Image (tube, rainbow, N blue to C red; front, side, top):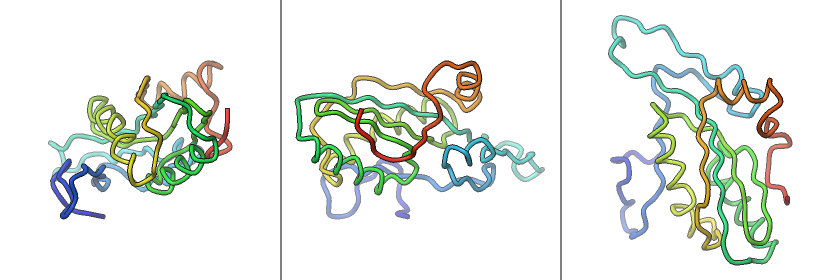
Length: 167
């Protein structure tokens, strides 16, 4: 993992790179497959050394993008590359002129999760050769809300099968 100031440019590049932050001591190991997420967000009780630390949470992200039509095979290949570059990607659905990406993000609060999500498409555009589409929708919900929606029969079902799929 590259260690640098968040948002800093990698040496020798002019494009911004999406940076990740390692999980802090307040967040236990998370495999982040959908089944694993149910049990993964376990927050340790603060000890006397970590009382002032802010607790990380998991946020379910749904990012919608659209734009001019692109060949379906290129869209699929680009989304597969994005999934490879961003390993916590759960599922992507796509068509020739739009796509939806769903994944879990660890962040301190909704603002941080949304900021990372809004950078995802643009910062991977060149490396994954993504279509020049714009973000047209963003939903960020906490883990509890996500599971409440699923339990009540609302919202998208858990991301299964995981991967990149046509609409």
